[in-house]
Length: 505
Ligand code: GLN
Image (tube, rainbow, N blue to C red; front, side):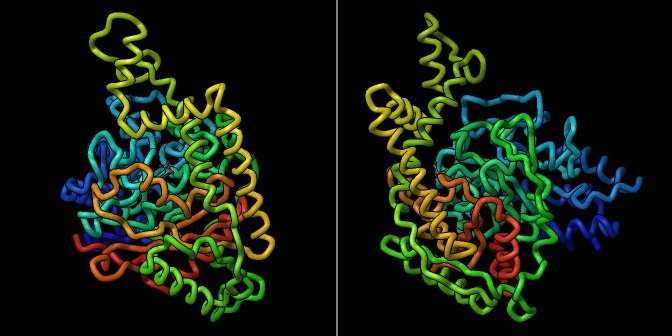
């Protein structure tokens, strides 16, 4: 077998091929680098590691030859540019951080790669850093300071955001897997629009240490890959307690890979999901959902029924309020987090200034893009003395009510299912109005506000001139139900082939 035979193979296959010595890490890395170069026009990468990746591949091959059997050793991977990395720049797609080099690796990067003090790494090889919306603010990847990302299925379309580069890179088979982050949908939504699988774990499962902060009470890392199986494999390594993140959760992680095929009580080979109750929130299937998306999602739900699951109606009455609540809380936290970019401690510093005030002002004016400035202003406003009670405090109360809605719904079901996005990917440039972008987050924000795990899996395509635009199904679980989510998604993928479809590039 050669690396060419393994083109487009998933992580699980690559791991097996490496273990069987059918291919070397160097060959796999070379092939990925070549494809990344061929498809540079997608704009998926902000930095490609080249020589460093080849050196890491050689080290992985040498370790394997010496008896190292770590399953992901030498498997190539890309990181969203929101993770800081010791050997490559980290910009969060902002001019503010252009050329920034971190003295350390983010915990997630260390866990998947070379490790760090006290943490064994999985030994994966980092190919580079993927494009994103500036500071992860966006749903279309049009807010990057370094150019848009194109959807590999249809290059006139957006890839979704903010982890658009990661999703596009996996969909185009430039890399077998990539990391993402999700504050209000940024893993799930680009995964849906690019036809790949992604999971946002429970808040606190993956360390935020070394993740450039957007809204700290919501930010969560997760994997984007071809399959639920691969996501389980990656998440198993990414997750884990980290004393350097105060909101990191200290609890034992179940074996997510073993759980994929572990039979549920009452299940059989023909009905692997027998006994599983899937709740369908009535608010997720009403006005505003494009017919083509609704159709694909309903077809997928019928497949879940064939697999033995029971569909039950549930209600999440505060869904609509998730948009105003999120777009108050997230900018409020962002305005505080981004105050560190003052041109002194961090970030771009303007070339000419008369005094300190002008230096701050000009540095920030030049360093931040329009969407980031908009959010800093909104955030500063809602936190200001006169408006704190009217906006920020109200939004926090709504956040609690949204979490209560989920708690009530999970009294009636084990998982919740619905669309990820109300529409398929739209055309680049089509949604100039920021509000129109915010509204597209209606199905992803509430799980984020409640800290719940959510995932997106490919379940079909749009219709007519959207026939090449993927549709994603969202599954949401109770806190720490990642194993249940991944199990259900894996069983669905054993019975369907949406996740095997590839764009004609
Ligand atoms: N689209 C949402 C926003 O613009 C969510 C982004 C994210 O999850 N990082 O804030």
